[in-house]
Image (tube, rainbow, N blue to C red; front, top):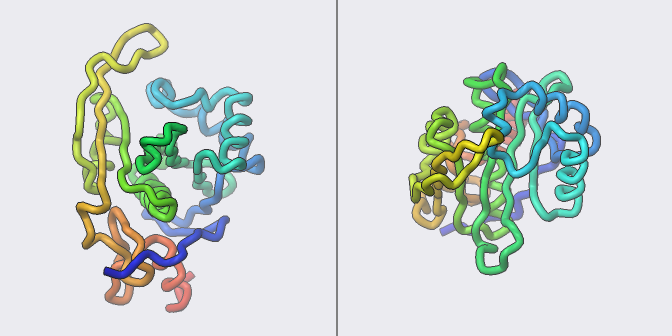
Length: 224
């Protein structure tokens, strides 16, 4: 089996989605204001169960600082300098779960259905693999049906239902679904060029590729 090669995205990176080209970069001070505007435009239900209130400028500042310090990874997708989505992987602080990362992805209502969520999720998954993550998880409520469809389409399986485990701003409790994906159980899902595990490979010129190798090969073939 081919071992994953050195595989670091060079941000900012232009990538293709069904809704057009997007610029993906690490969350930074440069996109602070557009991230706050993005968060404040989200439906309230999308904000209920996030790790932090990303509509609060002080929380966004702390988030940016955490990314800069390397304690978590967050990437942001923009179209015409407007944030249309982001994705995060977070390994937490507990040593005995250092091989596990939680993935989160949020996309603007106006940009849903265009493949941006799948693209961002794929990218943070591939980045997690370069840090030795052996299992990835995602948490969501049963009401978040779009998110469930996305993760399950990419091979995640329902692992547990935590009853009354989440409480919203109104004090109402909700069940929480735990979905998981173990790359070791999907050894066939690797990039043909660099060997990194993937959730859903991109086909180009007869090869199944990860996102970065796809973009590089696309440019070599004269795309643009």
